[in-house]
Amino acid sequence: MLHRATWKKAEKLKSRKRIERVFREGKSFSVFPYKLVFLVSPAGGAGGEKGAPVQAGFGAASRNFKKAVDRNRIKRLSREAYRLQKGPLLEQLARKGLSMAVFFVFIGKELPDYPTVSAKIGVALQKLLKETA
Image (cartoon, rainbow, N blue to C red; front, side, top):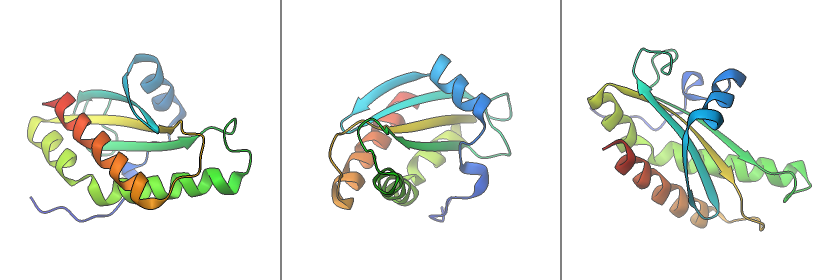
């Protein structure tokens, strides 16, 4: 299955209830400077909304980055790196009939550059692949 590198509305983790559920019931791991919290559920069940196999959300702490401009930049870089590298995760979840909600929290203290973000998101997605294997 060929995958287009897009990030549709259905793939965005926006529901407050679902985000709270991910943080309450989900598993987590760290790939510095990110902490990932994720929740895997059967596709079509309570987890998979609108048919998207993965819903992703991104955040950066205002405690570490006082300016909204900096927080928004971190989230924008993170979303772009995720968008370009999510293909294998989508395919594996579709094959297994699962859906996932994942939230990337940037816990670093310094403003990152894109190559760093891209590399770390790649490592994090590989780790997620292993978790769902």
